[in-house]
Amino acid sequence: MKIYTREGSPYLWFTETVNGRLLRQSTRETKPRAAKEAALRIIAEESAKAEPLGAQWRLGDVIDVYWKDKGRNLDSGDATDRYFRRFMDIMGKNTSIMSVNERSLVSFSAQLRSFSKKDISLVTINRHFSMLRAAMRYANRVYKADIPSIDWTTIRVQENEGRVRYASEPDLGVLLEAANPRIRPIIVAAVSLGLRKANVLKLEWYQVDMVGRTIIIPRTKGRKPLVTRIAAPLMTALSTLPVGEPKDRVFDVVNFRKLWEAALRRADMHDFHFHDLRHTFATHALMKGASLPELQRALGHADIKTTMRYAHVEAEDVMTVFDRAGRIVPENISAQNQHKMGET
Image (cartoon, rainbow, N blue to C red; front, top):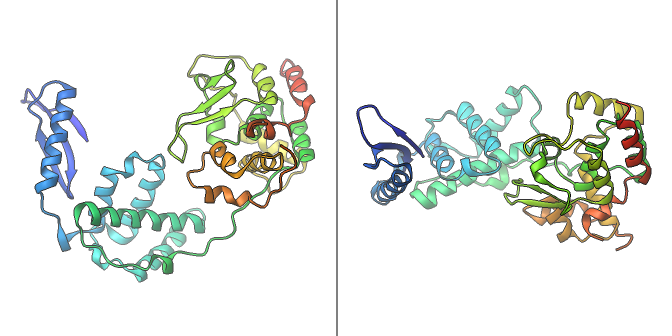
C-alpha cells in the first residue's frame, strides 16, 4: 500500500489493489499513522463489498492480488516476483485464468528452458508451478475467483536427487592451507555456522556478539531469525579481524571469487562449490552426534524434509551442533591465519 501527498489536497492519499481493481482514494487524514489506519479501514470495507471478477479473472489479476497481499512480504519475494513475471511474459498477463491448463503449463516450461539465457534447473521449474498454484488457490479462497482444476502432479517435472557434496576433515585442512589468509576466516565461518553464502559474505558486525558468542541472521528462507553459536575455531578466526562499525562487513570480500577458485585449484578439489561448506557443516555435525531436528534449527530449514537429505549420516559421538561442526577445523589453522594476516 502506497500513502502519498497529492497536489491540491490537504489530505494524504493511498493506492492499493482490491479484488483485482486499483483503488486510489483520500484518507481524509493529514498525519501518516492516522492515514494508514484510515486506508486499512477503507480497504477492508471495499474488500467486503466489492464484487469478484468471476469468469473475467485473468492470469495477471490472480498474480496481482496474491503479490499485493502476500507475495511481496515473503523472504523469497525477489524470486517470487521473477517467477510471476516469467509467467506473464510467456503466457500473457491478459490470458483468461480459466484457459490455463496442463498443456499450456507444459508449454510454458518448455519455452522457459529454451528462452532462458542460463540453464533453468528442474527444481526451479517446479518452484514456478508451486508459486502459481499458491496464487490461484489464494484468489479462489479469498476473492472467490473461479480457477481451473489442474493436475499439478502431472506437470511437475521429476527432480534429480539433491546434490550433497562435503569435504572430509583432511580435505578441509588442505583447502584452508591452500587458501589466501584473507579468505580463511570466511571458510572457517561457513563450515562452522552452516550459513548460506550470502549470509556469510554479507555478515555485518552488528550481527556478531563476541561476548555472548552468537551470530544472528535476521531473516532466512524459513522466515525466522536464526541464532548461531560461535564455536572455538571461529572465535579465533574472528579475533584476527579488525572490528569495524556496526554496519561494516565482517569479512573482506574483495576479489573473493578469484581467491576462492585459486584455493580450490591449489587444493586440487574438483566439483566443489562454496555451498558445499554448508553441506560439510551439516554432515559433520550429524557425524558428531547432532540430531536431525537440532540440525534443522541450525540450518534454518522451514521443513525437516529438507534436512532429511542428511539422514544417511551416522553419528560418531555425542556438544552443541556448532561445536560439533567446528571440531573439524584443524587447530593450527587459526594460529597460522593470525600469523599470516600480519604479512598481508
